Length: 240
Image (tube, rainbow, N blue to C red):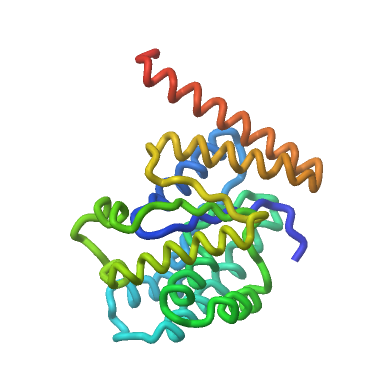
């Protein structure tokens, strides 16, 4: 596939604020007239919605990590074909709350399926349609669960050690694929994380120098970061 859009994913352990930051990024881009598609994996296709209900509520019994992995991969294949590829061909910025790396972290590093093998199989299934950038919101596991509180789903109820392996899996992925990954401290204030997301995306695009379009987009993200910073500072000082 010849990509003309920009594909950004948010990853991280439970309670790190992925959905919030994905929404904030989408909102910021739409305010300046950028065509944006916000997705959830699983959850943005008919198959994905059903799978999310099955797995998170534990409605299909005790699946093995391998079974979970293939269910997520099947759902992701539909997401790519139905939404991501068409949007990218139109030049949109696609933002996805979780994607391929979640399966590698949860079912691979934490679940015991060989991460390298799972990474290879997962990429093949989605035709190597991978994110241009993946933002990992890193947070200590206990802090994440303090944010979530008592209302935990089937995956969130798994042992603390499982979730610690998930977190470390993300950090290992980020370390091994520095060109794609951006790691941000999710203990920061929500507004500060959003500004950092914009800054880091801009920096990565500007440094890539792959095309005039990439540099232009980098400048756009830089201006969005400046505007968000000014708004943050004005609010802090009671201006306006």
